[in-house]
Length: 461
Image 1 (cartoon, rainbow, N blue to C red):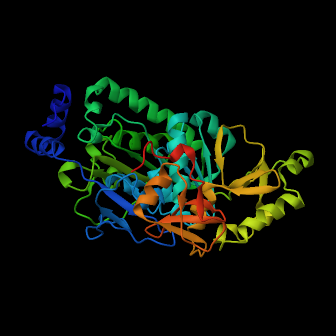
Image 2: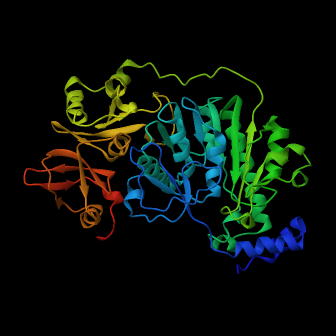
Image 3: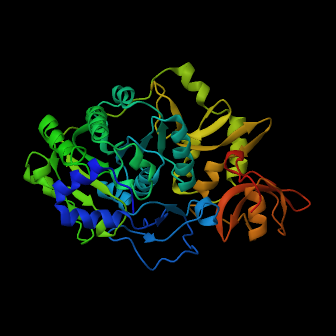
């Protein structure tokens, strides 16, 4: 049984009644439920996990546990995520071509879901203010094979002036008091207080104020938290409706495991009944709140224009010789849709060759990654990068070396391995037929290791 703060216990006994509160507290003491999503962007989705218990209402999502060194995870074929946390991105109903912002994006579960919905068309901006967490965000987006994402690490107040009324849809999974994570993260209990709930409420309003500036009239906002607190849930939605004129959209979810918001907890606005609550006693996942909102009005989107500066722009273009070095490697592989016109889109910066997600040179932001990095130009050669390997796994490939379990463990550790293959030069490396890296086969059958050093395991196995 969790050692819940007395103030928390009394609060929810008052809100829910003692009998319903007791059911909630009992459910919070039970083990948390784990789940994973399959990646529809990948050519192969054959996994060793049991896919017989689907998460309700979420496509290609199943209950079960994922291990961090499994080929399924390392290849970006699955993403381990709390089942309740899958819903905010699903509610956005993103379409290819949309311009989408995930404002508080790390570690990347929601961003990966939004990226797969875009299917390589349109733009995803994934922002995370913490530099440490932004690094994890980048790794997960890269692993998922998303090619059209701009990753930034900025305070929302710095982001908003760069994208005025720009996005079709914005997701704000706001920092919160974390009540819904108590059983998954007992440390969250220790820093909880009612005063902290009110601090979070103020911070959420500050973040949302900036988010609204970036949403075009008629655009949609998904607001979500992992807390039960009405101050951070229904009351925030009421504030958005009053302050900015948002309307609450219906979600058409039918699972009995999903509850609805309480109008009496947020200024008695009837539309709050359309917001969603995920209680631990509903046995779907951890605690979560989500609301789908629409901003009034309609306006034609104004694109961010590329700054016209010939000298600056010419520095980003590859020379003919550089282009041919890249082409000599890409010609060996089958290309996904995002790479078919790479010659028209490719740029280079400090020898890093990339296809930008957002073609602009006038953003004054801390950019972690812009689009798809193909690799690095070195003296008289081009070395393909890890992000390219993850993108190439979207389509069936022939130049692949599949490793057995022992060699796979050694490769993750950074070792070279011997392989039996007639292939020479750069190859894609897989385990259980799931591509997870580049490698280079030498004349004597040694597979040189190109798995990124920052992702390698500390020890073999």
